[in-house]
Length: 498
Image (cartoon, rainbow, N blue to C red):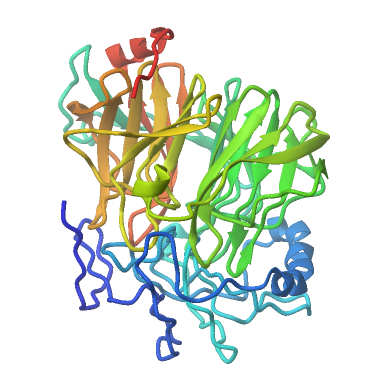
């Protein structure tokens, strides 16, 4: 599938193909600033990395806001518009929006307790440094995306009147079926680039951002009743984050990385879901991964394996293991270093962010993503026991970034994402035994195309929350009933041979 690189700018419209400016820099009110020359070598930007010492200057002020942000639903700082991914020139890891929120590698903050005045960007991998004279522009939240007051209760919705219900064809007993969940309970803001983690029958939703601000709030969704709660949390609460990872370790959640605007973090936080207390574990050793966003994290044998992402200057393809045998005292170990040459000589995937990673036995399965210049369609397998990368040859491929991928038995269910041209609502199945893609008919009323959403498998359904379609940030919950496909979960003994 050929990449497209249109040169004309277009207004973002849902369900239409998206054209892009030829530069990978965000187009905002400071578009006239000089742009760095972009090298299209995968995962590389021609400009040099920002000094981490500059990040420390503003980090304290950013973190001071973390304790109060959960009580503030309206922020005085609105965020500027940036282009959507759609061609070889889009910044990888974009969490793009229709208002002006831009992402960036720059770390020029202020230490006066206010949000840094440089233009914020949602690009988690690469972007241009902001001008020192740039100031945030004023804007308004989309009317249909405005959050309700924190703590406001939403009554369980009444049953749909059959006379007014959408005309949807019934599904056969073997057919998968889309429906929108009837939710109730505490109100929550629309979210994208958030995390969604299942423990028992509860889905923990943390962080993310809407069209104007980033959050550090925690919501809990009862996966049986679709009832939202907003528990009171204590302890060392993380700063507002997006594009971080959240991994279940027993009844605790381990959050790593992420950031907001110019800030990129490599911090580790642990939330005890029994008493809702946040803490920062003691990290032993002198090795830590670089700050990053848009990476992935998978749990295996008391370790969390982190792959890729971006630091705001370049995309990454290193693998780190966080030892979580003791959630009070952890240590990092570099498992697979970054590329020193081309993928053909290194025999490892190109650096990338907004890909997906799933663990099957000792095999880490990497699919899709982007390096800022290309939307990928490749599948890679890394054996964490033997430390060997292998590329998977698949006859028919699909390009995707900002999608979700969920293991259901011997299949990888991929939902939505961006294909380099537009947002999708496709459901793709990767057979992990034959390593071939399969598209099945899905009945019901599907969600609109979207990316930067989250999904988990619970019982016999996939639960999808939030996301972004190029014009709107969503707060909805969608259910994909797997029907006979739910029996895939009974297939527990298979191996991946590549």
